[in-house]
Each structure stands twice: as C-alpha cells, then as structure tokens.
Image (cartoon, rainbow, N blue to C red; front, side, top):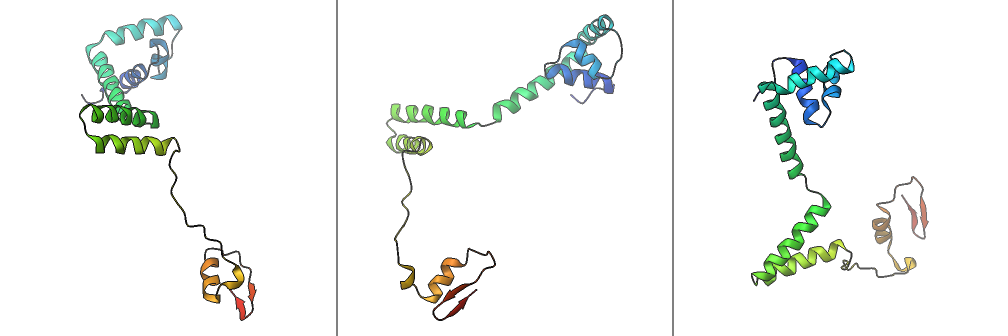
Length: 149
C-alpha cells in the first residue's frame, strides 16, 4: 500500500504504528486542538479503513525489520539450538563447530602467538628497521652503524 494521500493522515498512521497514543499521534501529525477534540478525531481516523490498513502495514514492516536484526544474544541462542539439533541428528562435525564458536565467545580458546624474546643488540640494522617501521613518532634512533630513520 502506498503512503496515504493526506500527509497528516500518513504522519498520524506512522505515529500510531510506532506506539504513540491517538492524542499524541494526532498532534504529531500537525493538528492543533484541545485534548478532547484530539481524542475524538484520532478515534475517527483510526476507524478509517485507509488509515487502519496503513497502520497495520507499517506495524508489519516494523515487525519484519525487528525480526531480521541479529543481536549477539540471538546468534548465541541460534548456536545453542543448532548444536542441540546437530547432536540429535548425530552430526558431530556441526556440533563440534557450534561448540567451538560458543567456546570462543566465552573466552575458552585463545590463539597461540609467537612471543619469542630476543636481545635487541643481537638484531641487524635491517631487522631493527623492520621492527620500528610501524612506529613513526618522528624521532631518530642511533645505532652503532649510523642513524636509523
């Protein structure tokens, strides 16, 4: 359904679909009146087939959009469900992968890193330059064979 022809009716429908009450939606649409008049007019607008259908359509779109948003919690829930299903179907590889991903999330596994310690005086000038290439603070370092930029 396209937007409503009346811009105020469209704004009203959008406000209602977001959860505003009739009075607030009516005023948000640009109408200026007393509380009682806003309540009565909002009630009349909601009875209009075009407006009520538009509200239903907008609410449906919002529900679809919210359902497609993945959160960390939803992904973890899906992993647990997939793990359970994989185990029930004797699909050990899938279950192990789900276990691995869940384990990573809770910090059970860490990647191994090479942390060999070397004496700086044992490094060549090229090795020192390589190590320092990521550091660019504008300062110079003196080495036995000359200045390293």
